[in-house]
Image (cartoon, rainbow, N blue to C red):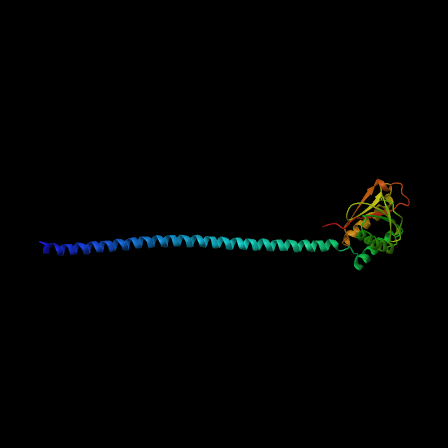
Length: 215
């Protein structure tokens, strides 16, 4: 009886061992598959994070480059602002040629209280005198300063503007020509009439030299 059972027992043992080995194999395969999936998910997530980090780094570089460009532009604008206004020889010749037909016209100045504005007055004074215009003392502005050999009134504002009194129609062609000639020469200048010059003698074109415009 025992002899009959033993072969079957051996067979059963072999089957059990085989099944156990297969089970272990399957379990290992399942574990490895889970590991592979986790690794793949980790690698995919890491790849996304790396791409995001690269994108952020690129954005930071772009922002830094833009900030540097703005800073350089600001430096250029500041340097441009600090440069004094200068009347070139070509502008001088152009202005003298066109305004000489009004030789004898009285003119004066008011100015923003700034050395740069006063330096521009010295240049304008020389140009207009070369055209035969006649300088008169300050007629417009509160406090007076001596600039280029005569008084200049202190006024606020920027840029250039020419004024005549509302009672000085005779000087209207001259002030219009002065403003237009300056603009054609590349010097922005407006003109207007003002009650502040009514009754002032001699009647004159008063040029206000304001501070240098930002733009």
